[in-house]
Length: 200
Image 1 (cartoon, rainbow, N blue to C red):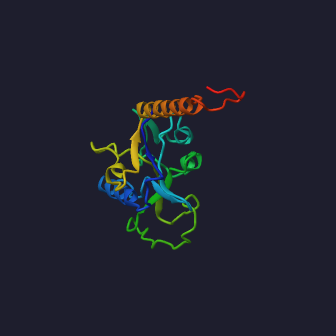
Image 2 (cartoon, rainbow, N blue to C red; image 1 turned 45 degrees about the vertical axis):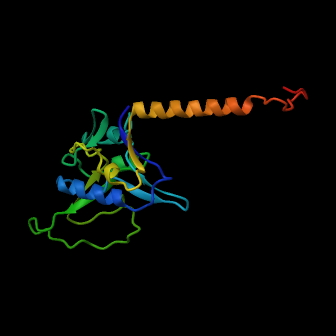
Image 3 (tube, rainbow, N blue to C red; image 1 turned 180 degrees about the horizontal axis):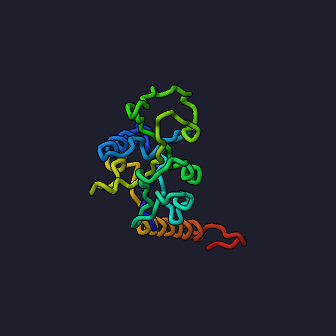
């Protein structure tokens, strides 16, 4: 099973520290500055939406230039190969891929001021003159030994990296707790009336 970052909404406070850290660390590597996760808010909770590095990644299957590939235990995107078709963003079941673009102002007379557009316009529909759109997705910060920067900087430890072993442990713990609770609540106590009217 592939590794991925998961969020616990009960701990997330919506501070966007994860997004800021993601931007800073990727910009430092010369990659697109767009954050690889997006904090989503509902009436009850906040939590970042992050790539799940799917086993049979739909984004990789639809990429026409093989810019998205399985590498070890992660699904990685090569920004240099991406042609900006946005097919991966459409195929992602989690909405964890976003198009981003760095202006190419000053190149052979293409110095075009960024056109203004409505802030509510979905990035999938946006198109700016002189800007090459490139898909961005979580790469688990594979370029640094400390792992994903978002996990490292989260002030409430709402983010964690999980893998197959972690999920198996969590599943075993949940099954154990369920079994204990079922045993305690289903066992008749001394003196308590049973369904048939007998006493234990």
